Structures are given as structure tokens and as C-alpha cells.
Amino acid sequence: MSSDERTTVWKATGNQASGTATIEGEVDFSNSLDVRTWIKDFAQTFQGDLLLDLSSLNYIDSSGLAVLIEIRKHLKSQNRGIRVVGVSSQVNKLFTLTQIGELFGL
Image (cartoon, rainbow, N blue to C red; front, side, top):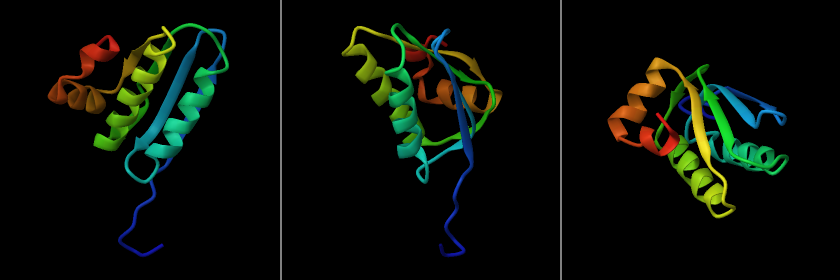
């Protein structure tokens, strides 16, 4: 990796009983595909809507937002939904700025 490349750190945990996925750290172009894969895989382990806790997510860029929109579309095709149940102030600003918060129940 060259010195100008940056790899962000993220962590995800899931609770199948409640259908809640918690994403922490940062989501950007360097890891958004990994985050997408994790969320899709987790969502297939239970029935019902996916609850997304982003209260410990420090940063998300446009590629991360695109992943969330893609996951929403994927779940909708299965007659399921996705709702953000917690959001950090920084991430909330981006949801508000891009006007996609209402897609996720914000």
C-alpha cells in the first residue's frame, strides 16, 4: 500500500434475535464492499426488517450511502425493510444533507 492510500477501520456486530446490525468506525470507498457483503450476509440469517445501529459510526462517504441504498432495495425485493435506529451526529448531518434520512426512518 502506498503512503497516500488509507484503509479505514470498521467493525460490525449482529443480533439475530432483534435483527439489529451495529456498524462502528468508518465506512468509505476502501471498505464499503466489505460492509455491503457483511450486511447482506447478516440479513439472510433472520426474517423481518433489518435495524441498523449507526450510533458508533464516525464517518460514512457516498460509497457507504450507496451501499445502504442498495441494501434497502435488496431487502425491499424480499418484502423486508431497513430502518436506522441509532445515528451519530456526524452521520446524521450527512443523512440530512443528502436528504436520504427518511428512506431509513430518520
